[in-house]
Length: 99
Image (cartoon, helix red, strand yellow):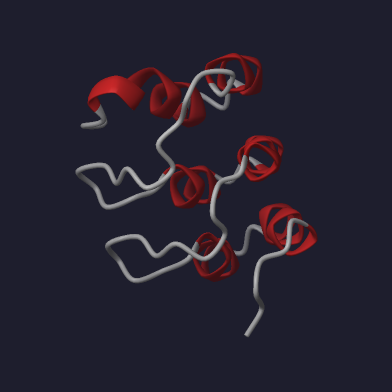
């Protein structure tokens, strides 16, 4: 569905805003550098969806904050552009670079 092979369940849980499923799936090894066929990393995808709880789960698991997706955006830039203030706050609180 999202072009993620082994991570497909995780991306599906993110798109469904199912934080409990995301938390369970994050208990396994996660490739945070994997980019889907739409160009998103896990964190940029969660930021696009706009779910701050899931964004925090990913940050706490070690998702890199400064990775660019194929659109040339970090999760913070994408969230700010979309006006997702709760996600922006979660990213800044998690250590995202505002420069």
